[in-house]
Length: 221
Ligand SMILES: [Zn+2]
Image (cartoon, rainbow, N blue to C red; front, side, top):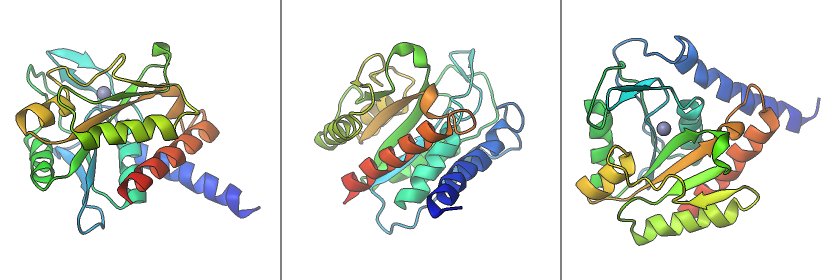
C-alpha cells in the first residue's frame, strides 16, 4: 500500500473517531461537562476554533439538530494549525438566550481579551446552493474581512458566498456576541453537508479539510 493511501485513511479514521463522542448518544449530551477544550501548542494563539452546535441543542425554545461532524472538524482544525479549539457539549436545555454554557462563554471571553480571533464553525444544508458561507457579522474588523477574503479566494474551487444566506448578524450567533458584546473579532463559517461526510463522502471531505486547513495556516503565517 502506498503512503498517500495510508495517510488518507488515517485522516478520515481520525475524523470518524473524533465524531463518536458526539454521535454515541444520537447527538444528545453525555455527562456533565460543558465543553471540550483543546489548548493548542501555540504560545500566542491567534485564532480559537469554536463549534457550538456539535450536539442537538435548543434555541428560542426550539430543538435544533446537531451540525454533525462540526465538533470533530473543529478539533481537527485546532490540532492541525496548533491553535486552540472549543466545542460545546453542554447538557441540552431549553434556552431563550445565547444557549451557551458558562464554560463555553468564559473560554471565548478569555481568548477575545487577548486579541484572539474567533472562528465559529457551523454546518448548513446542501439546499442553499453553496458549499461554504462566510458570515462576517454586524461589525467586522479589517482582519475579519481579510480572512473572509482569503477564504473566498483560496477556496474558489467551491461555491463560496459571503454573508448570504448567513451573515452571522443575528442575535444568537457567537460572531454577533463577540463583535457586539465583547468588541472583539469573530467570523462564522457555514459548511455544506456534502463536505463534512467522512463516512459517506470521504474523498471530498478530506480534500475540503486539507484545503481549509491550508487557508488558515497561510493566514496565520
Ligand atoms: Zn450551527
